[in-house]
Length: 181
Image 1 (spheres, rainbow, N blue to C red):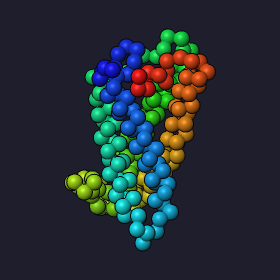
Image 2 (cartoon, rainbow, N blue to C red):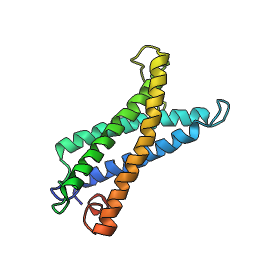
Image 3 (cartoon, rainbow, N blue to C red):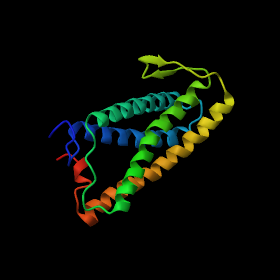
Image 4 (cartoon, rainbow, N blue to C red):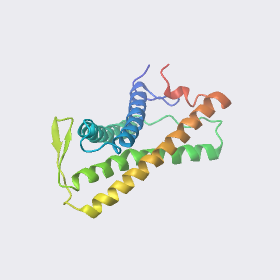
């Protein structure tokens, strides 16, 4: 299997980035959902918050790597038999998912740092706060972060549903191009 993309298929590195980001995003949404019900005195409260922040920053970094990789080795084009509306829908879906890969971690960063504290990235180093302490910004970032996470669940469901439709109903290469074969 090639590392880089070809005109027809995704390369190994693109597949690794795609599936890693997909699992991280879904895991972070689940972790966010789980940790909002924890009380401050719960033994998992601080640990879950720490991992949520660290993994969120990792998503942002991997999204930047993915973007750079896509510039270096562009994604394969759409399959020739797709209808124009399917090509447009796929482009819109991918742009929206790209937006979520950036906006959710950025709003998470603002939630944490608008309180004036840096983010400890896996206790390796601190990512400093670059905004002033601002409770209004923090509340806005919390709301946006929350709604974007649930919007991402809808987008991912649509994205996966479309891939499965192409695989099982259309029986085309859409999903197979992103699988390990």
